[in-house]
Length: 368
Image (tube, rainbow, N blue to C red):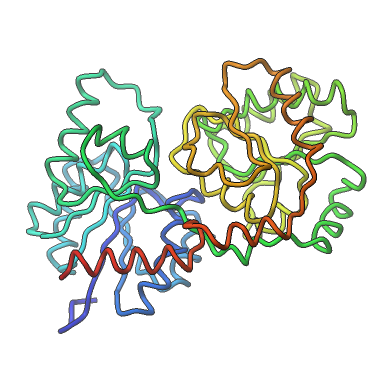
């Protein structure tokens, strides 16, 4: 699609279309932007996850694949430059965290006037020398015209003391309202009636720290034999984690349910969520869970902005597995009205009704 007179185009660069927070962010926000006059392109590299790709296209996004920058770095930049020059976007926004300098350089070479760098994570698993890490951050800052992050910790990780705008990972809070009927149906289907169901929603990757989650769960089961663990999500560590569950003799009590289109239903299934993450920007799953009124214990490596409800606790990773298990037990004793929690979340910046208007106004201010 070539640019027409008066049309506003935003072009997003992401690493790949998987089932993670960036894709969720784009599908949540893009629908409103498209309804209000923007054409939205998404440029990605790796083979797309079919369900995530379909969701973005259903929102109205135009998705285009380019060469993988790890295997073909030069071709990746050339492909990106060709697309930018052909589409002539008004805004280029890059969501590749430390690899953002690739599309930012391409956008600068192509003459793009508005180049937004958008950081979604507060750390990285990429093992590079500190000097290389500093160089990557410098290239990002030098080639961007505007700085954005999903949270304060994510922004400081790359931008340091430089100023930046925070755009929260907002959701449609109504979609995640607790549903007792759905809860009972799912529990019957999964044979979890009368069980204390602990849940985790997220990709099966190192950052989510599932190994520690299993260790904490093992301590919980020492006191509560009714405890069961349900995992929603897929990822590169799935086979390793299945093997670990067998090794820890927990296979019968840990359900690997994979990726779900109706993840909102599974929050209603759960009684508690545990996220002992090694690092997080502003995890969208923590927002979704709280909109469902789900009590949760998160590691203190999660950005504190997502600690909203009285039934949400941030707990340090240095604490023992037994201490984590005790915190879960304490939290479970607090009276909790899950319907009221949804109303609380409706009145926060994490409600997409506020978020989408704020982001639209931000784009308009840059264009003006």
